[in-house]
Image (cartoon, rainbow, N blue to C red; front, side, top):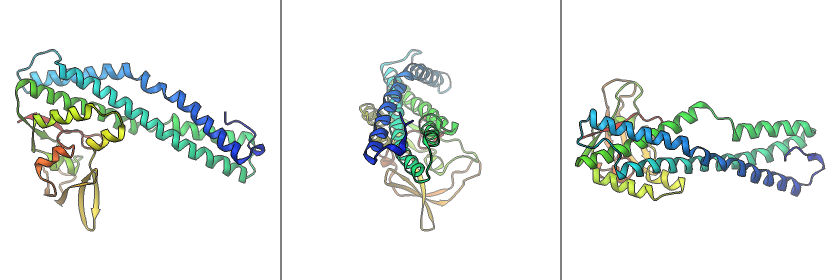
Length: 281
């Protein structure tokens, strides 16, 4: 649709052509979330099943072998949530491609490029925006899918076994983040986690999901390294243990432990590629 003689178009025609191409691309990419439902559903079942088996065999929780009603809800939720996030991601890609296409055409005309040169640049821009993506991006997506499914399934197992509290268990090695070191060993109420799941399950907009279950970021406040989540200051790093094994470091909390769950930090994942898990307390 964008392989036209741009030199013979007006500014209004160029805007219309780019807009029409985005509509067409949107129709094509809209099929993707639907097509991934089946493989994601199989993956969600595998994650919940493995988590349930681990809860029975390793944590020795008194639960049945088969999924309970909450397990089924968890599996459906992580598939639906992932579909929303993928749809949202392609929406952002389309917006980005629209801006890049406008820039490519304007730049090509300014340089006196012909139809084939501009079309080639537009094809490269479309491929970069809509098709190609670094493997690391998809690793983060897969890790978040597995991590959230595991956490919710663990909460389901705790509830079925009558466990009232659970604790955060972080992998303490050279790669562990400050937020996972800070959360390590802290305990939370199963009932609060169930209420958080009920809240998240009702959400459909990706931004709402991210707001309720945000990831933690690090930033410098002057010479102090701090941890923040969705505009909430979580803690200040007093002594960092980054790069060291079996150490958590020292932190100055800026929010009470009781408020961490409300801030969406009551269970992992709390950042990309998070390896933290939970255990019955």
